[in-house]
Each structure stands twice: as structure tokens, then as C-alpha cells.
Image (cartoon, rainbow, N blue to C red; front, side, top):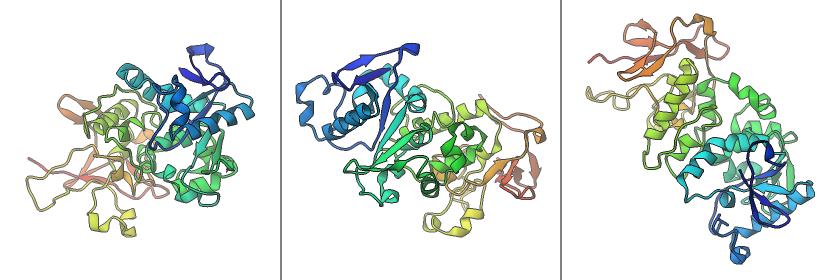
Length: 333
């Protein structure tokens, strides 16, 4: 792990138990960021992104810390191996930080819910993982801590206060619920929508930039190896014109994107977290009710379900309603 020494402003590398106590920065990337190549040059102070680096290092000093991790300058992104290791380790790095500084540089004081920080894919894990977060506005004025703002953060993100206060409780959340947390977020690169969720689901996989939507499919395949939670398949395709229709919040299950075409079929796996936008209340039945775990094979998905006509009934339901039924349309070919 490469850290920035806040006294010398030089990068230092540490491994395992040698890693010192450190702060970590969460922010949205903008123009003129200070990169790994820049930080060793005297001219880095002239870059637009130097302001946040200076503010973050000064705050780390105030917190009694000698090191800070900042993604823009602590990762050598020219090395694909280092980038892959960093992304697969990032949740743990945020989790183990003494404090995280969340810099909401597009808002002033009380407009916290309007910050784009809540719309970016990478900042989801950066909000969930650390137990101690200090939120700052564009003037670097403290808005409050994660504990102080937890109710507000929960309303903005639809993540329960329990999970925000104790990140380990995310393991008790269904796959569909965790996917719903990311359903309205965006990343610049398509693949990052999947890579930014590795820590949320506690899985690892190699990075293959250029694979496009396949990255999210691979993420779901990795999740399948760790759980037999059928809510992974309880996603929705909905018409663009009805995306804000509240009635759809009670709908669930994948349906054909072009139902009038006999040649149109969908994968059992979703295309993106957006398909889980209305599935935040879908939870699995108690594990004892499943007779066979599901798995992805060379011939496709192996899953044990009950058939009700042309509907495959999934082992999941709407929260607090055990009588509800969620299924997938089956097309025989």
C-alpha cells in the first residue's frame, strides 16, 4: 500500500503489518487531478486538484496522523497489475482507515443531498466501509460525521442506519438490496460499475478494461460462488417511459425487453445495477427452504426452482410478506 507522508509530501510504500495508521480521502474526480506521476514533481502545487490534496493532508495532521491515502496520486495507474490490486483491496483500505475525509466540493453546508458524491459508483463503498467519516463542503467546512449525519445519509442513499453504523451488517442484506444501493449511481467507465462493487459483495476478480457489460456479468458469477440468494435474479426490465412510475416498485422479476418478439430473450443475469432499482425490499427465504444451491456451469445456470406454468418461482419474497411470490418468465425453445 502506497501512502503519502503528510510531513514530507513524499510517497512511501508499506506492506501487511507495517502499514501505519492513516487517513483516506473520498472525493469525485475532476479536472487537473494530482496523479502519481505529478506528486514527485515540484509543479504539482500548480494543478487544480492540488487544493484538495493540501486540504486533506492538513486535516490529517490535525487528526494526529502522518499518512494519508489519496487515489489520484497513490496508485500507479500505468501498471495494470497495481491497479487491479488496488481496486480489489480498496474496500479494505477504506475500512481500515482511522478516518475518511469525504470532500463534497460541489456543495455548501446544508445542501448535502445535492452533491454528486451520492451519485458516483465508487463513493458507495467509500461511504459504507469506513466507520469514521468526516464530511466537508467545498470550503472544507465540517458538515458533520457519519454518526452525526447517519439518519440523513440513510434517507439519501436508502441504506439502513444499521449498515452505515456497522458495515459488517451488509453481509445480512440480500443481493438485490445491495445492488439497489448502486442502482442510481454512475461511473465514467462501464466496467467500473462492476469493479466498484467488489468490496460491497466481498468478492475479488481480475480487471479487464474493454470488456464492457461483461464485467457486470462476471461480478454476478462471482457472487453466485459465494451465495445461493435467489434475489440476484429478481431484477426488473422496465419501459423507459415508466421509470419513475411508483407502481413499478411493487413489481419484481425479469421480463422480456421486447415481449412481442419471439426472438427476443434475456440472460438470467442483469445488465447493470439499474435493473435492481426497485428491488431493495426483496429478501431470500430462510436458507433451510432451498433444496439445491445454484451455480454457473459451462452450459449455463444450474438452479433448482418450482415451476408454476411458465413461471420459475424464486426462493425470495418481498420483505415482511412471506406470502409474496417472485418469479422469472420461462421461454421454451
